[in-house]
Image (cartoon, rainbow, N blue to C red; front, side, top):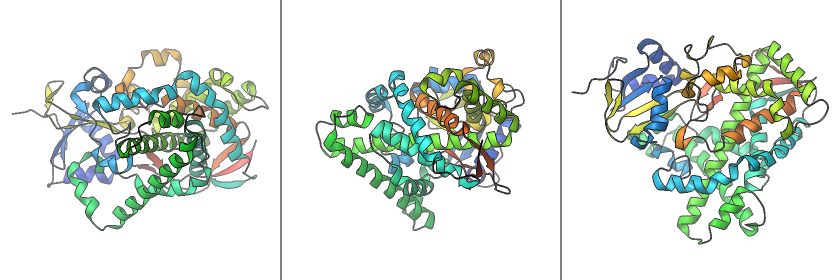
Length: 439
């Protein structure tokens, strides 16, 4: 008989799933605190293992990754068979075709667009204006993705996309438990809202492709090259193209906007860090706009983003399904088990991060980074499925924060509740109402 690691006792059938669904991050924090590096429970009849050790995470994502798949079938109604969801040879081919769009030299060319998009957004702000900074970051991120990757201006879609994403992106528990697919067939309000949100997203993607297809090959953006590669137009290739654009849109928009939003929240709560950030920008950038050439000199700005990604990682949990019985430090995860790796938990582990709950950008010294286990910090995932746009997203966050913080101070509105919502990405549940004042 398989010997399972310790874990919570089941009070009644389905209790493990319900406890996880009610408060995913709190539940996983408690499991790690009470049971250690390997925890087991049942969820929807499925064996679930939470692993909290950096070396075990490395093995799942890197050294033993062929023994796992991603189990994201439930996400296909939105993401299709795009890069985020696909596996095997299809995933390898997709990554190979998309990767050139994110080479270092190409990303460097995007820097000017990122700064311009941030500048256009802040130019609309008035002194002491009350803003939902989450929405502002969404507009910037959407425009950056549109102009750099697709060669179109998506700003007119910002409100529709924001509302649609809120509806379309559900709890990760829905994607982890295959038996919940039947819920999609019920006439529930939440199900109808999710379907409506997905329909809006699909319509936006279809419009982008229609708009760009006549000029395929005439510009140097990623969508242009994908359209050229799609030279044998048929239903299958059109569907695959649609799926790729959807995956790039969501990855480049949703995760980056949330990363920047959380950074602004943390900056606003730590005046000393904010003062140091302003001094760095005054010294490095001065009265001009930041450029790619400034990136290396913006050390504190980079570390603010790193530390924000540690405490509030938009990609807050990832999981894999075992394709065969998998050994876990003396235990066995049977084939078909779900293995969870929670950035929210590991990033707050005091073994890796002294004073783990403290926002401390200064911790990110070269010595600290050199000695930290690789998978103690993995905001972009890891291995063959690491986020393909990690450099793109990090550069955008640094340059957008630098552009805005050079001119503005953002203060959290009095009484505004800041509650993390652990959906497919980690987002501020009620947005971020902040007051903008000129420096």
